[in-house]
Structures are given as C-alpha cells and as structure tokens.
Amino acid sequence: MSDAQFAVLATLRAHGRATLGSLAEREHVSAPSMNRTVNCLEESGLVVRVPDEDDRRRVQIDITDEGNAVVADTINKRDTALAVALAGLDFTEAELQTLRDASALMRKVAER
Image (tube, rainbow, N blue to C red):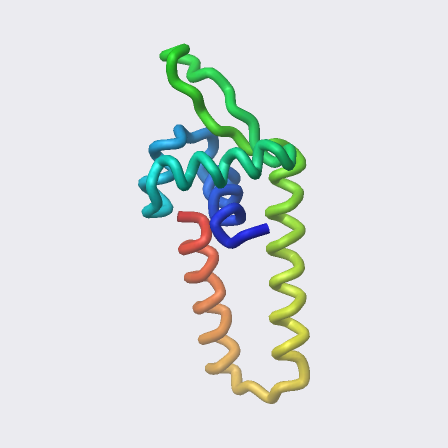
C-alpha cells in the first residue's frame, strides 16, 4: 500500500466520509490523482463510494471495516517496529517524555 493510500484511509478513519474533492484538497493533490488513489482502494475493498445523503448527485468516499482493520494493523506494526528499534536503549526519563510527546504529536498529524 502506498503512503498516499494509507493517508486517505487514515483520514477517513479519523474524520468519516468525505468527497473526492475534499480528500484531494486535504492531501494537496489533484482530483484526478485522488480519483486514481480511491479507485485502487475501492478495488481492494478498503473504501466504498456512497451517494451523498443531501445531494444524490454527489458521491462520498467511506472506509470499510476491512479498511479500518488495515489502518489499525499498520499502526500496530509501526508501533511494534518503533518499540523494537528503541528496545534496550538507555534513555533518561526526560528523553522518554520527549519521545512520548513526539509520538502524541505524530498521531495528531496522522489524524489531521
């Protein structure tokens, strides 16, 4: 899975349904580029296109249960890899707190 695809899944997981245009704007890519990304995710069963409840001409992109599972699994794998990389290193309490703070900030960025 590409970083762009993961970013779309993480955004949908954190914020819910979104239009193709709003996803493109959030990720700073063109609408055609986002359409290709969403098509790949849809073909993999990770997102679905659903009619907008207020305007049937518009389509919203929503994450599937499988897409949610992929995001959770990817986050767990990344957390485990980081824990393994840091295991056995001798950090002071201040350094550990800095790592915790940085981790919290990174999660906020990922959930933007």
